[in-house]
Image (tube, rainbow, N blue to C red; front, top):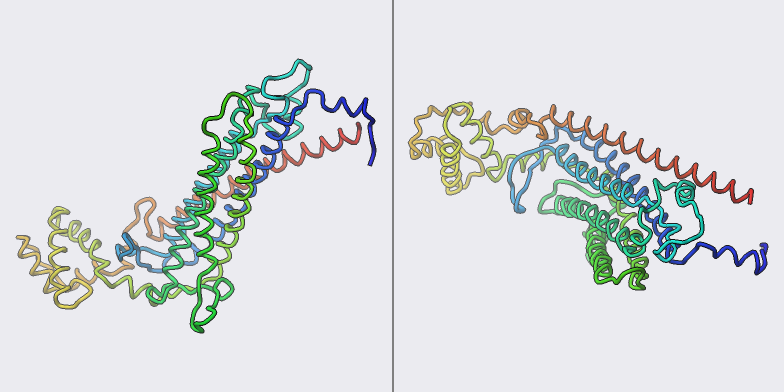
Length: 400
């Protein structure tokens, strides 16, 4: 520990203000947070891509309105979440590119007459440039926090949606997956319980993130010109938000990696509840050259008739009856009907970009892997630049 004395030490205050120094510290902190989120999300996406490749052809029921909708594959579902998390990464990258500007040297917001070199100090701290206007970063000290908060909240929405899907899939009513015991808890009274507490916690953290974001945005309203003490409270909020949410990403990766898939139940549900009816409609349109509305009308009639008979799929007699009532003179055969409702057959035909066919999934996986490589290069470049800046700054400090 050493002292410069009052005369020399007092000069350290020259061209400095708490305003721009606190704004600087927050930019440095938030910048590191953005990089941490990008790194964690990239790791989660690597896990999802591995799972998608592993479950590329696992037939799975898809849902809308919490009801059976159409058949897909588990690989298709994993990749849908990976795409969402890729957008989250880009939001954090956008944040970084927008706010990696140094407010240092802005003083109280109105500049200084001392001949400081803001471009040099920005470079030494790893920023892309100094803020173009000295007043702006202090007048809007809430904005960097608020925008990062939005990126985190959007990411948490995706994690929460994924958590809810896994929770429902793991229930006895669905029985499609089984969570590892390491990510389930028992009951204080019921010996049979395996509760998905970690996934429920992710949902709760999402609600907390929304509340913190609303507070961050609200603090930014009605600020008068220059610095306002209101923005002091954004620091507590954004730090709590980061602490609550960052750990949720690797947790989700561990849960996904360790869960067990009940393929037998997935395939059974992929034949129940008339879930293959949409494919029957498409096959009739393709094979018999009738309009989509005609085919759908016949299928709807057939579903109602089959339900009255207690069946869970369209049978040949009810379909023939429905076609006749629709005025469609089609020679329907059992072989056509069986093939039209065979999941592996029609899944393979969904080869349009983004679909669940094996070929489409391979393209989606390849695209996501390329995106991951781009994220890795971008992250490495930013981390290297900051590391070099810190090294250079440390050398200058030792020289002084």
